[in-house]
Image (cartoon, rainbow, N blue to C red; front, side, top):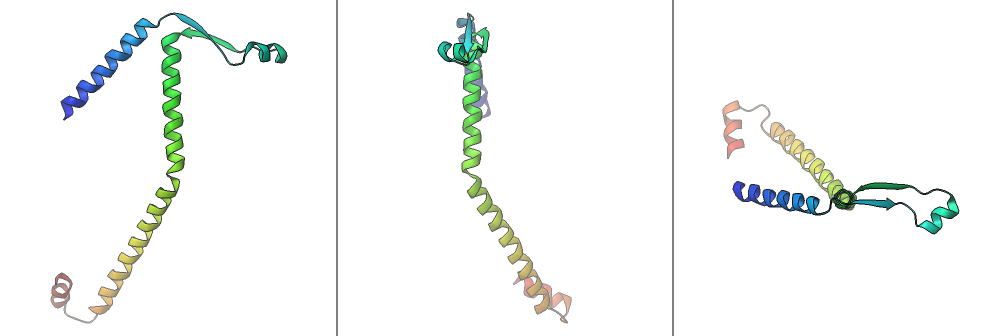
Length: 116
């Protein structure tokens, strides 16, 4: 299974290298359309290779997706944490009840009762 994972990531790396080599031309990315940039008097642009623009776009998309899922699953994580606290409280209660039950008895008898 480990080798299949390595082969998969090697194929992904080869595809990314081929994509980068095929898209080395310089492109200009503009933050605003020309009409809006002319009205505002600013025109933020950046020039970079096309493969960098593609990789940055994919990376930002993944980052936004992971963040969206993390926020969406907040309720599930908080419920799990509350259930964990409840389980710990119940374990403490059971332990306290078992020590109360065996209070004043012989230690061997208490251990046998606890095991059975």
